[in-house]
Image 1: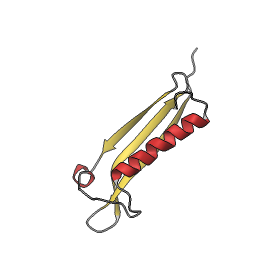
Image 2: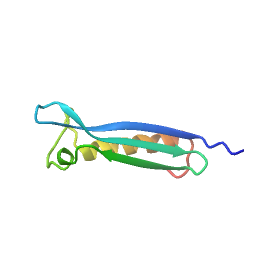
Image 3: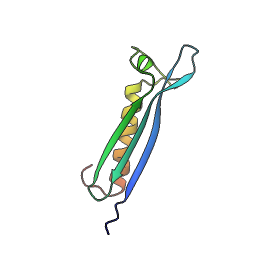
Length: 87
């Protein structure tokens, strides 16, 4: 029997809506696979119009691109901490 160990991450990308409150525009999920030492990121967009709005920010002042980059950085940082040589 082969047991495969994975580490999972989830997050939301949020941007301010017309009311000025954060609205979820996309869900992110990722898994780090210990046996293959790789990762994947999936993004499920739920509000394409707001996601594609030029200059859109969340309440914290971050763009969707910055939030995605932060998510990816966290995954790579965790992979390094787990001893993955690829990162």
